[in-house]
Image (cartoon, rainbow over all chains, first blue to last red; front, top):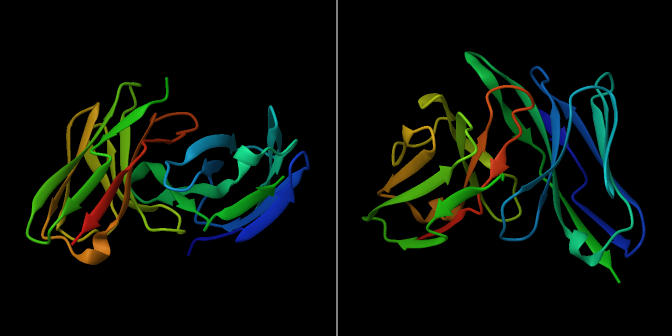
Length: 114
Length: 113
């Protein structure tokens, strides 16, 4: 089966740094994605990791260790607008499909306080 | 431009109605997806189209009928829905190669009465 695990909720204050962890066990692995989703809106793509290591993009960074089945999303200099749900998703294999499919974690609701 | 456009934004329908959700992208993506999302839950995959052919059907009830008229358009036809089908329906698209990053539309908020 597929299992993507991430914390349900996190809180932090403006200007702080927060790390959201994600562990996974999936049938095959073809990349790990992080999405941000504000309430009632569409998920917005944040980052993609397919090789081990750190990918940095402005205030957001994402790390992957394939051997440990582990990723984290690091958010620096937090702003109020960063309050949202953060979804970890792994692309796993599907028989007969070259695309595979995304398996989503349940999302981590981040609340940023002033 | 990573825009996926969905219409309508909101839809209210009765259990005997027939309606359609529409999705459009002009990024040249050849893979398109339908997801269903309930409140405080992650998106659940329903269907995947690859090069306008149905590639994945996640055992979705037949009251949901997808259609891909061309590489830019994806429809979801709805018929005889149940109140528990009320949800946010999200469309996404991606390239076939490379990272296959999926870009989502804003969704259609569906209420079934």
